[in-house]
Image 1 (cartoon, rainbow, N blue to C red):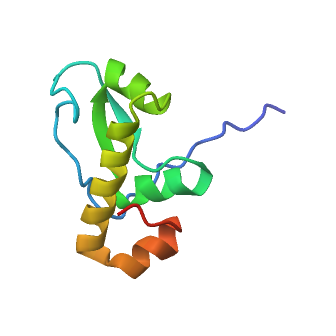
Image 2: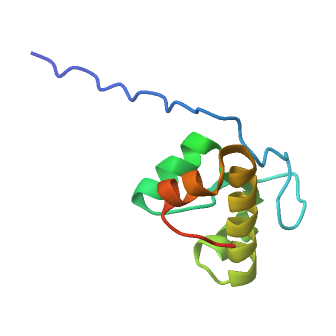
Length: 103
């Protein structure tokens, strides 16, 4: 008679976060941090979550990155994310997973 409650399954993280800093990656603030997935979009955001490719950013820096006003920081994050990913899994796996080379 009553609808069943829908339970959302927790995401399975295969690997630990590569950028677990505890402060903003850009301006070094330690308060108001938000998680930013380095690679966005439908499949890439899920891959970023799975492989731990996300960083902590303060609210101001996160807005500048998501609106892509700070293209230098966006490019820096993608290059650094690819370097860290390739040091563990290799270049071919990165291209297979994300389909693009940022280096």
